[in-house]
Image (cartoon, rainbow, N blue to C red; front, side, top):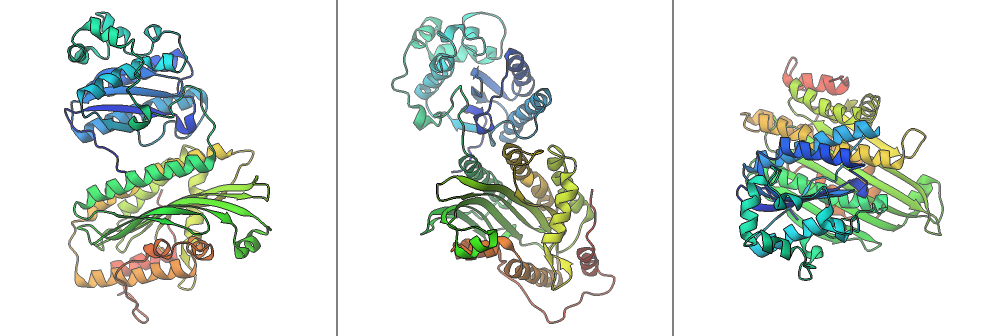
Length: 497
């Protein structure tokens, strides 16, 4: 399901909660500060007609008054600004809110009226107060006094919607028996945080991330659309494969998610040194092969693994993932940009992570039979388990931080290079280098091998292979050429930050 865009002059329900249903407002000071940020970031971009802040979630009903990009950015700026302050105050790191923020277009007046009632009644429904009229952090009181507030500009419109103030207050006494929160996407927003297993929470995150990324690539390409293929694994689980081909910018790409479970195959039991073990593994894997050789190929993967004993108890669990860039023609500024985004994501969790996982990426994505790297690297981390320094929640926050940084790392590079002219010779070079990409995936890549050994879906496993590729016998680039310069750097990994 694609994320709805925020179109100008339309009404929306915008809502979100803390990651893993965690608390996002510790006290009144937090809520007051959040509302100040709302006034700073949102008031000029959208007309706020109702809101309510709760312990671990919030609701807004708004009419968008700016263009899609400005409105979406304004809400992102709000969440980022508050998260930064909250993390500093609470001595925490990582993502605070679920991403992307939820939004639902309001298509009729009756739904809008019921939504306003639902938002204002939220504190009473969750038993935070006995009477919602007394709750301090909702917009209800603003409709019953003349003090300027966040909803001032939209107040008159809403009261006309209810005919008048008297009927507005009368309607708020209803029990909303005809309003279905489940159908509205509002279910599950509870005041008390509910414990969610890492596998459920991370798999949910991967679904949302896949939606975000595929929407971004379709927008970038402007022509091709992703084809979706839902599949099931006979031994347990399945996935959602999305493939894009023959676009204006993207020649071939895939953004796939899977969640598989069952008995750990004998070969993998030997690998992990266990017996009679079951497992669950989920992940998002993507590869994008652009048409223009001036645009680099990109790969990313974020995953989670659990292993169980015969009683069904978790005996081991870890996160893994990363993102890396494979250029055909090297632009230093692009390499620096990609690596700086990676470093920024890492630094928010541990200042040592970038250098550590950059080095691992250089080591892992290495064609030892060619004595050269597959690309210019990025990040690679695996077997990220709980320790004295990092809890599993800390690792969850780190991995999702990296996942959320991916589009910022890659899209600006594509935008900058996609229209550059290229020759047939440069296209041939791209296809020769793609051959090296194929060699790595089929000879060295652990993810490919794991998928094959666990009876994974072949089409999804091999979707990373490019559509056009060449193997030229003993090919060597011209001395002093850009092609030779690339090879020299692939043989001697460079520090880009």
